[in-house]
Image (tube, rainbow, N blue to C red):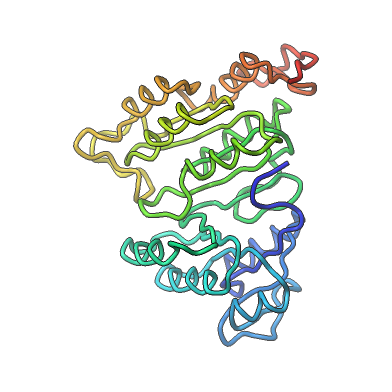
Amino acid sequence: MSIWVDSSTKVIVQGITGKTATYHTKKMIDYGTNIVAGVCPCKGNTLVEGVKVFNTVKEAAKVTKANVSIIFVPARYAADAILEAVDAELEMVICITEHIPIKDMVIVKKYLEGKNTRLIGPNCPGIITPEETKIGIMPGYIHKKGRIGVVSRSGTLTYEAVNQISKRGIGQSTVVGIGGDPVNGTDFIDVLSAFNSDKNTDAVLMIGEIGGNAEERAAQWIKENMKKPVVGFIGGKTAPEGKRMGHAGAIISSGKGTADEKIKIMSDCGIYMSEIPSTIGDVLVTALKDNNLWRDGYNIWDNKGVLVWKRIGIKK
């Protein structure tokens, strides 16, 4: 019941000896993630949280048969860390690091062409298949196993949306944070396409931000290709023109990339839009009911978190 990662995924932590990486390595292990190795040059044959450290990704992958890595190294070294993981022929690389220079990511993006490695990020919270594996920095406890795919440019808005729907008993198949930088590895369309093909995903929640045109391109793809209902939200609606909103990619320029513009295009393409964060769960409920996707165990709550209706599900 997932895309890309599950309980069988074997994970390498690049930069594992750093304070932040060590902290999140423990959190991932506690969640049940199969962390099989760490990597830090000149720190080989040491242990961090019981995980063996190797000097290179290639060595770690060869010994442990790992297929995914997560990167916590400082920004100035992050691009090289990504390239090292690609050269080791890992299936996926998740880069948490923020503030990577755009010129570095342009080089990485070009290098990835024709390779079999998928990059998620940089500047992202990672990916989680609830109750199976958490490869990232998101709070695992708010997630619930289920049939709703989630893809987002924003970390904190993802947590808010997931928390809302989990409290309604509506679980997630996989949650993917693609990051908000202008040059990244995996975009909305990549994730939407995977969810569209996943027989265990009923609907998708897509969370975007002001700036750029990623949401507009995804909306057009949804209109032409998506077979499942999509619920959308755009963060940064009240931001003035030219305001940068935390992510390097979230900046309005020359009147383009505004929240109103994105919301209109997404609505015109058939996406169920939530105007404010607090109604994301309500809009998802509407989308599920409209498409006969309501299931046993889903609950309807009012804005104060009080259960007001529970319905035996309508199954596909």
